[in-house]
Length: 334
Image 1 (cartoon, one colour):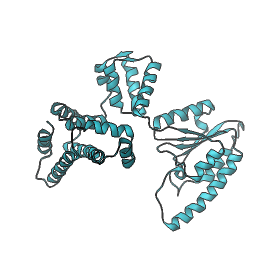
Image 2 (cartoon, one colour; image 1 turned 45 degrees about the vertical axis):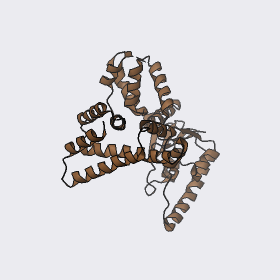
Image 3 (cartoon, helix red, strand yellow; image 1 turned 180 degrees about the vertical axis):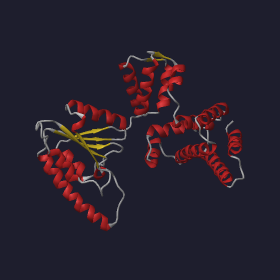
Image 4 (tube, rainbow, N blue to C red; image 1 turned 60 degrees about the horizontal axis):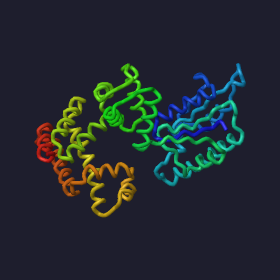
């Protein structure tokens, strides 16, 4: 079967696999046709299938690829009105008939790829079930767990013959924050750096600090009452051109997440039960609880209330953002 479904939220590995498929099938760039299927109103499914069956005037055995990108019919969607639903059902039945007809007799010279580049295909969809009934190759690229990502990084570094000190690898993992695209961008910079053995100073020089790491370090230092580390993280964020209003909002968001976790924990819920309730990862819940184990939920709630008052004062022009935020940190972060 020359039909594939690529699905998941790890966009880099999806792009990498698509490039590999085109190479494996020896398909040149000029023989690749991409259809934007994200909009149900503009995408025409039959046109895409028609493209699968066309042949070159110069070489009828030439291989080609048809990419159906971001197929709306494989995405989980909210409920719609009854009238809209009836229209969608009619279109769906026609789409299923056309799809099944092609799957029964696919063009062996055409690589057809359903490319869910930014989302995971909804396995409940009839189109998904039809694809799997005909042995379509379904390849999923979900975001890796932290330990899976660390193993992936280790393999990539080993493959490229790089040796990092322990603290250098820890810093690298923090700076790319479980993101394969960020990691491979960092790998390009490491290649250009020209050294095979790297230490902490090298990584800090080569790989930029990302926004997630900045707020992670600031919030962790704050709830740990490590004032010097909190102020250092704030200084790094200022150098990265964050303003105080943004930092207040980001810290409030993190504290709100910790408050929700801690409140459920105090009610007797286990890590896995909290993860299910908050639609979060077990590992993230575990780390969240570890970071605020010494704090009660009422303390986190007080921080949130003070930040809300601070935000209101800034919006009303009564409080200067820099002074207000610094006073909050000095009062609660030591």
